[in-house]
Amino acid sequence: MTLVAVSVLIFAGTELLPGDVAQAILGQQATPDTLAAIRRDLRLDRPAYVRYLDWITGFVRGDLGRSLASGLPVIQLVSGRLQNTLTLALTAAVIAVPLSIVLGLYAALRRERFADRAISAVTLVLVSVPEFLIGYALMLALAVHLGWLPALSTLREGAGFLAWARALALPVLTLAAVVLAHTMRLARTAIVSVLSTDYIRMAELKGISPARIIVRHALPNALSPILSIVMLTLAYLVVGVVVVETVFNYSGMGKLMVDAVTARDVPLVQACGLIFASVYVVCNFLSDFLGILANPRLRHPK
Amino acid sequence: MRRAIFPLACGAIVAMIALASLLAPWIAPYGETALVGDLWEGWSLAHPLGTDSIGRDLLSRLLFGTRNTVAVALAATLLSFTLGVILAFTAAVFQGWIDQVLSRSVDILMSIPTLIMALVVLSVLGTSIPVLIAVMAVLDSTRVFRLARALAVDVMALDFVETARLRGEGFWWFLRREILPNVTPTLLAEFGLRFSFAALFLSSLSFLGLGIRPPYADLGGMVKENANAITFGVAVPLVPAAMIALITVTVNALVDWHVRRATGPTGHG
Image 1 (cartoon, rainbow over the protein chains, first blue to last red):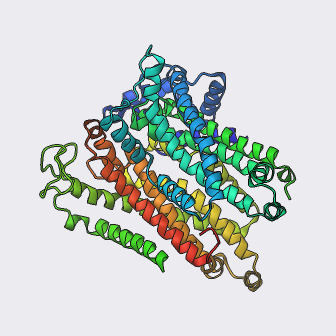
Image 2: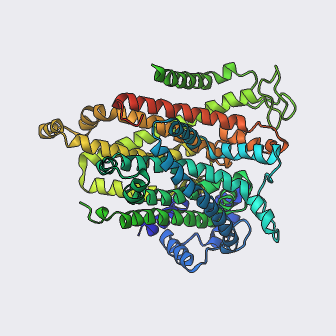
């Protein structure tokens, strides 16, 4: 249901707003004749809802139309890029999520002490600075000065696994750093709020060992917020990749979409937009769903 | 007392940034787009921060860039608040189907990542500054709407509002006299957060080449223009990026301090 609404909105965003696609494609060289020809080509003369239904049924069947700039089918442009982006995002998630929960737990246990304050200050800064600052700073330090890693992540066909891993390292690190900061802050808050409940204090007073309190009492209750944080992180990654891919010139979906927007390649933009938005919506849905699974109290909304 | 120093420092930095953006045309040593030297010159007396990718004075670009970024972000935030607050109060005052329609539309708009929706819309509309401000404002107003509606609904349930209803007051009365005075402090804090988010968002767009167009300076755009310098070991792109960070970090810290002072110690220190 949400997905349908989202697709309508993305379509409306490109179709109904003032601004003529045909005009946009031709730019300065537009003459009335060529405009009409392009409109006929793109079948823009039909009413918007017919074109929407056409577009969305095509999308479901895997036919995303043709790119205006290159004339290639969109699906061909997208498929390889999508795989690259998923590799990047998932690797970053695999590194960042467990680390952020451990750090969040550590900061929550040491709350108000030095370690907590230090972690909180660092993550606050990481959350507030633009992704590209972290990206370029890492690039300058690790690639240029130390020369450990290649600065740009241009993936070549047939390169070995090692070369591939080295190319991936910097964007993954950047993305992981950004996501780590967000997730850790949320995890810390969630764990702190569980630790300050009465039953944890009760357990402490009974003299149960701290390890047992964490594993048996705190974690099951913090599970639901943490699960939803993890999914929100994945959703956040979807947006994060756009900037990070541009920084490192990594050929993924984000870079594809930015290039498409610059070239005003509307079908390609629509397809990328819909894919990004779908991933985002699915992650958000899973977040709610898992949250409810882990916390039976949410099953009966008041 | 130790605590008071940090917010004071942040306040001073924010004030300096505001002053620098107001006075940029007068205090900048060179013009916004003037070519004054070789590319990527080092730091010198003539060019305190060196020069950029085509030989413009970096300090001047930085001042103008800050000015442009702050101005556009501020305009977008103001518009977003006007839009979001009016719609939210409309929803809260009239309730019923108006509230339903507005709230569900906002839910749907919020289910698409902001950056993605902005990219989709900008691909058709192109990027002129008014379009940029409008797009940023509309997308951001969804968040303002959420918050303002929740606040206003709470206020509308209070007794003195019930009295006003019985007196038969109109919509603008509710907006100005009943709701606004009760929610202003919270909205003010939110304004700071939304502003720093807008500055960050604008910089990202400009960095992607879809924000403020060259030759006009913009912090995100400056990072993009000078990005190649990194591979030669020149840290030039980090300067505007750090400026963005400085703006967002100090504004966020100020808001944080303001909220904490308003609500008193919460035990989260």
